[in-house]
Image 1 (cartoon, helix red, strand yellow):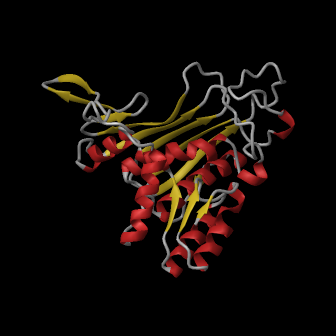
Image 2 (cartoon, rainbow, N blue to C red):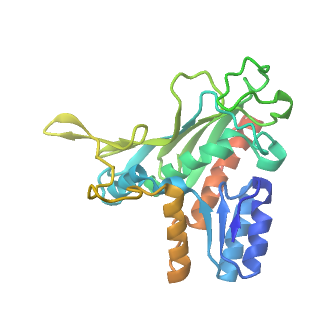
Length: 292
């Protein structure tokens, strides 16, 4: 079963489906709250059914390349990262994206969730210690005709979420992550679904494909792999499948072969925990510490 509803409905629909004996792929983010995400994990564990979350960006060529480098030890200890989901003026004007009740938030929970998931995945670090964050609603009330939005003017009266949000995450091992997200902000160069990592041996970023930076022969070097799929000139068809298609194939294989899905439920729950912590920190004006 696939759950593609507004965020508010993810948890109870997924849990009902799991209890009914169905495997579930749920759209990102996993849930509005960490408590709901944990309940989903527990339902999957209790029923023995598979549960995964739609973080298809893990399946892009650049992300798979960087992830393999991380697993091969290329970066050493990754101790600093940036998770980037910055749109200049690209506010979604359809559906319920602007509705806080239905979605739980704006760009942070919508596209920031992708950037954070990829960053945690490459770092292989799912143990946050604390977060501090701030949300802004600075451009949401701009009148029609002055918004410059990629998808046409939005309705300020329906814009009940933040237009940008930023978080600072400290992991239990001391690693740090800066999370930047926006739908509308006066920054000239947007960067979405990307990250930068820094390790003790090398670093990487996916701002423009994949780039690995390191020192060789006492010189600074940057490696930019060719990620275009090769093939015979007479071949017809896709040379590089879309990430959501790859995700679907891997999900079906996990069900048929009884293996783990690409995105484990507890991993996705950690993403939700951090996002919720940033929202709560913004509301309280204080850091949010995680007890376990």
